Image 1 (cartoon, rainbow, N blue to C red):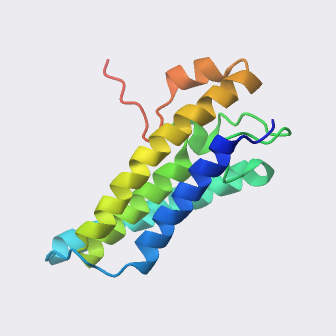
Image 2 (spheres, rainbow, N blue to C red):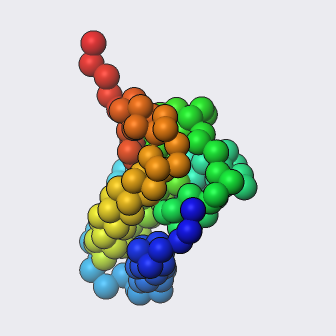
Length: 153
């Protein structure tokens, strides 16, 4: 599929948010205890593991753009059997966890901005995926966007 202006806009805003997260110092600090800092490191670790697994599973289909590559395949196994956008999940968990670890409300606010961006980016991406894969609508119903669906029975 051909990339559109929207693809570049999503990736551009994402890049700006990543730069803000990485380069702007802790301008809104808060005090964390050992427990909160430990919880933050646990979230970072889980996020990095999810991110690596998802990137390995996507292999040659990986792209920063929401429009899928023309040679992409729909992956519905592994971590993708539970989460439709595990790379976004890994980034969100890692950025939130690190914000907790260092006690930075600013980093947590940037993570919330990333969450909002990833929501709209994934909505657009899923529109494009439905055009490419007939079975995507069913896949959407059975898996969670960023976190696994909780099924109560």
